[in-house]
Image (cartoon, rainbow, N blue to C red; front, side, top):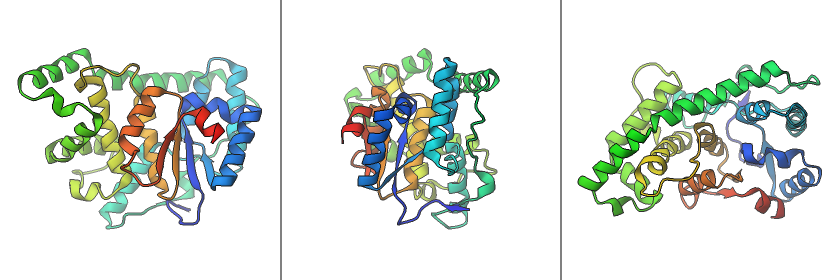
Length: 284
C-alpha cells in the first residue's frame, strides 16, 4: 500500500498532455532528470498522461511516449484517475481522517509490450472525446448568455473582474459550494449525501476540485472576455494530484489557458504549489 503523504518523499512534478514530449526528448529528458535531482523532485506519471499518449494519431510517436513514460515510472504505479483520489479523500474525511492510503490493489501499472495497438488508441480517443464533449456541453452558448444576462441586470460585472474575485465570491456562498460538492460527489459515485462543506474543504483535493469547476464556469460563462480554448475537464482535474504533496508541487504545461486557470487556483493560495511552462522548467 502507498500512503498519500510522506514527509520525506520527493516533491512531485506533473506534466500535462502538452508537455509529454519533453519526457521522451533526449536532451530535454536529461535536463528534467538533472533538475529533479537538484530540487528533490519526482516526475509522476498519471493515468490521464497514458490516455493522452494513446490518443496520439501517429503510431511511432504514440509508442515512443508510452515507452518513455514506462521508463520514468521505473517500476512504480501510475497515479490513479483523479476522481479516485477524491473518493478516497472523502471516505477518509468520513472516518475523521484527513489522510488516506492507496492500496496496491487500487493502483495500475504501465506495461509496454512493444506495441500500442490501434484498438487502445481508439478506446482512449473515444473516451477522452466523450468526456470533453459532455463537459463543453455543460458550458453551452445558452449557459453563457444566461450568466451574462444575470451579471448585466442583477449584479455588478466588475465584481468578478478577476478569477480571484470569483473564487472569493463563491467561498462566501455555501449554497454554491454545496452544488459544486454535489456534482463531484455524484461523479465519484459516493453513496448518500455529500459531507458538509466545512468538512470537505479540509481536504486540499476537494478544495482544488471544487475551485477548478468554479473557474471553468468563470472563464467560459462569467468573464466578459471568454478565455480562448479553455481548459478541459481532464486537465483541470489533474490539479487534484498536486494535493498529494505539500512540500513541493509543480504543474508543467504549455497550454496557456490551462496555465492561467491553474495559476488562478494555486498561486499564493496553496503552499509550495507552482505552475511552469515547459521551457521554463527545462531551463530552471
